[in-house]
Amino acid sequence: MTMIKGGCQCGAVRYEITAEPMVALHCECLDCKKSSGSGHITAGAFPEAAVHIAGTLKTYASPADSGAMTTRGFCPECGGRISFQSSGIPGMLAITAGSMDDPGAISPSIAVYHKRHVAWDHFDPALPVAEAAPQRG
Ligand SMILES: [Zn+2]
Ligand SMILES: [Zn+2]
Image (cartoon, rainbow, N blue to C red; front, side):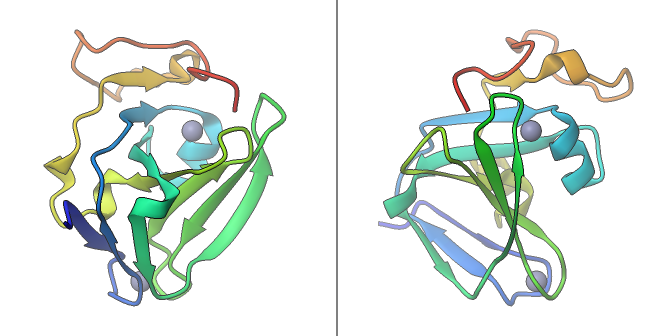
């Protein structure tokens, strides 16, 4: 049963997700700022096997603070950010909320890397925060 559908801006990459997110979060790390062009990226983490991607993502891998490699996936045509994965969390594939056809399909429950918070980037003040990563990776 498909629970969430989405894709990039140009439509070259589409996906369907057949699970609820294990967690949804805002990530305020510097790499998410660079890759999103904004103060944070919002994503849901899913079991990799529940995410069915049509089209081919281009990926870029870089080391996180933890030393784990983070691989970010984006559309090679329009550059839309779709996914990320951490070598420290095998079997997890995170999908960006903004790429979902209904970006409100997931509800972030925490903001991580809050030590990189930018003053103009407001969240719900009741949202729990973590200064860095919530777990290894
Ligand atoms: Zn695209
Ligand atoms: Zn991040």
